Amino acid sequence: MTLLNKFGIGPGNAPSRDVSRSVATAAGSGDRSRPKGGPPAPVAGAARVSPSSETTRVSNGLKELLWNLDGLGRGTLLDLGAAWQTTLSFFIEKGFRVTADDLLRSWKQFLDQEEKMLREAGKSPDPSVDLTSAGRATRFLESNLQYPAASFDAVLLWDLLDYLEQPVATKTVACITELLRPGGVVFAMFHSKKPEGFQRYRVADSSTLQVISSPLLCPAQRVYQNREIQDLFARYRTTKSFIARDQLRETLFIK
Image (cartoon, rainbow, N blue to C red):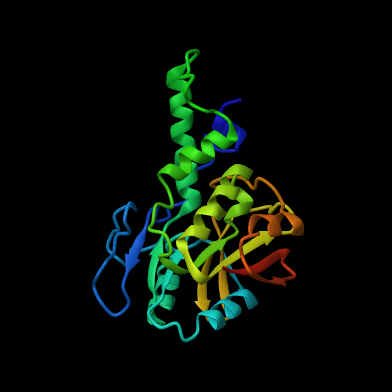
C-alpha cells in the first residue's frame, strides 16, 4: 500500500479547484502583504469556481468570534481553509487584513511529494529521512505556516484537524499558538463522527456559514473526544463550545 493510498489519496480522488496558497490584502487599500518566510501573495480577490452543492447553517461560533473581535479595529486574520472571496470580503469590510492559506490542500500536495520521493528511492531510501508520522509532521511544517510570531489576532481553523494525522494536528496547533497575539482567538470545528462527505465553509453573514460539498482531498483521520481537544489546546486560557444538530461542534479558543 502506497503512502497516498494509506490516506485515501490517489487515482480517482481528483482535487477540487480551490485557490491553493495564500491571499493577503489590507482593508481599504491595494496593498498585498507577504509574511516573512511565507509564500508570495497573489492578487486579492481571486475568482472561485461556483460550488455544485451548498447549504447554510446558523453559526453561534462565528457570532462569538465576531463578538470577541469587536472593537479591535484593523486586526489581522488567518483563514486556513479555501480562499473564498465572500469570506475575504466579509472580514476586509470589517477592517481586517486577511491571509488565506489552504492548509489541507498543502498537506495533500506534501503527501504527493512524499510518495514521489519514496517511489524514486525504490529499495534504497535515504536512511536520514524520518518516514514516521512524526517525521512527516516535522517536514511538512518546515515549509508551511511560516509566518512571523504573534502576527494574527484570529485564525479560522475550520474542521481541518479532523483530516490531519495526529502528529501533524498537534504540531499545527502549536504553530498556530505561536502565530497568535495574546488574546487571539482560534475558531475550530470538530465532527462528532467521521463525516460521510468532504465539506468546505465560507462566511455568508455574521451568523451564517455556507457549507459547500467538495471533492475529497484527504479522508478524515479521527474523531476527537472532549479530553483530546482540551489537550490539543491546553495553552489557551478560555474555551467555549457550541453543539449543533449536524454533528459539528464549533469551539473558540482564546490565547
